[in-house]
Image (tube, rainbow, N blue to C red; front, side, top):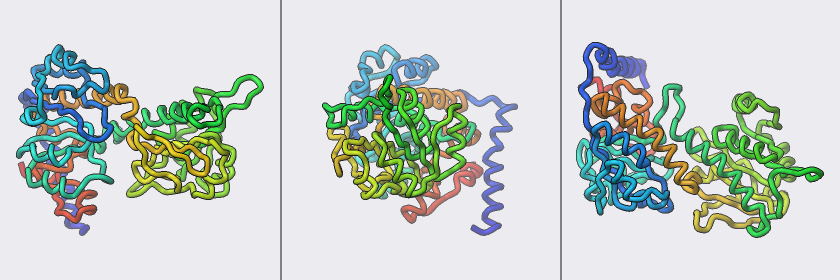
Length: 406
């Protein structure tokens, strides 16, 4: 990128922020939102973006919410719960997609994209590794606005929803491992925490990010002995400080990791890549040398996995054995506990939608909310994500410039 282009982008960014200053003197007109929540059609996606309680808050503020019948059944939210909260219940996704804002958990399918119309706002996951180019091109042709909730940041620059789902995945991974250590699941019949005279289970956690941190907290809470590996000494120090207790930590070195794995009863794969595929740090030979019956939970499988022996499984058929080791390799672990995950999503979506209504709508809000703006990848059909532009060789337009033009 030339220095001239960078200067133009900087000026556009400053111009895009001008309405934030004007908002002090001129109060924005409140906009009533029309929000649609379709039933999720993605395989084994059970989460919902808004709970009935959150819907009640929105409708109480004058916003309209339409929910497809059966959308909350998997998380024990009945249709009557939504109607009592003030939502309108409909029988088909076609009726839901008449709303101005479509709020989803999973990425939109081709059939759902076909129902979109110009200027409509879609808020859903993006999931770069599975996003089909045809779907993206169709959305561009439809000239819609699109926000990826997995790219929304909070005021501290943290990917707020990704962190929430990571907390869930970390906690749940340890509970899954504990379950599969029982003999009825093919495990060695160990409990994670030791008792008087019996040593606790050895847990190795690969990754000191959010998933790794909360897996560590859960394992320590159950009394296990924990070792954490990461390629970043900074993340290891941060985890050690946040936990306020001394645990074994090490940068990832093949010999040291191999030695730890030979003693492990449970291994949690929680490494996250900066770009592209998860680094595969555990080879087949390392797995072969582990204790027979050890449990591997590869949370990183949605980005390729960090074990050479990993392959994608499903919630209905979650495990397989390789070299005598139990492998649990289900992507989207948060959907295993969809009610908890739905509350976590709702806690973030609900305030965002209220701010959108109070601030004059989506286009006004992204002018002053940098975190939400970071999640925008389509604006009026124009691709505003450099990552998607590079991945699919499509034309990219700077969102700041587009906003500054209006």
